[in-house]
Image 1 (cartoon, rainbow, N blue to C red):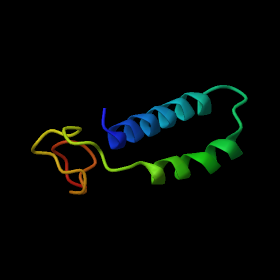
Image 2 (tube, rainbow, N blue to C red):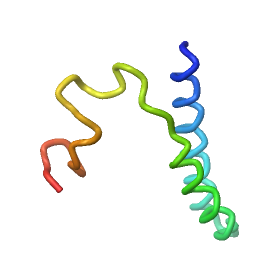
Image 3 (tube, rainbow, N blue to C red):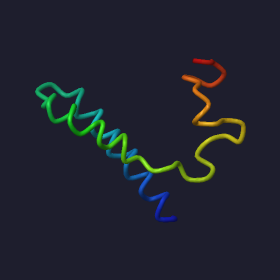
Image 4 (cartoon, rainbow, N blue to C red):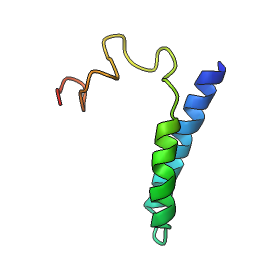
Length: 68
């Protein structure tokens, strides 16, 4: 796996784990609120092939086929 792909997968995994933690009773909201934006901002460019060929992650759509 290419280094950029590894970074992307690792960051997405951490965001998922943080989301699971945030849903737990007793989760530290201050921690979640501090870490979430940092992880989101550190998300590297998606590796080639992460999106279907007709999708553009920068086109502003919220959902496939829906405009924002």
